[in-house]
Image (cartoon, rainbow, N blue to C red):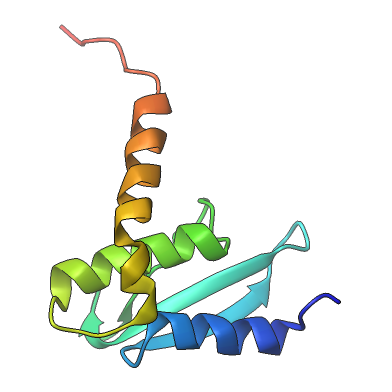
Amino acid sequence: MVASRSARERKAAAQAGPLARVRIEVGAQEQFVYKISCTECRAKGDRAWSAYRPGEDNGFMAAMDRWTFHLSERHPGSDAPCLEFLAAAQQRLHERRSARPIPPAQD
């Protein structure tokens, strides 16, 4: 059975912990787009910091990885179930960075 959008949203919110506000929207290619925002941190102006990145992968794993990094860097004493996957998120980030082509040096 496929989980509903609201069920996925509740599960993601439980994983993200009490500092997170989670919304799931349906993207242009009919995929789920996870938008996780921080209830304490602000980005530009009065907007909440968010794991959502326009034009990038915003699926569950990518958004949760960005959220996990935010929690570990900005809220080190926080308690959220997703923090147990911090090492795996760091490994995925390292693999993504290693797979990127190195731009040529500019003179």
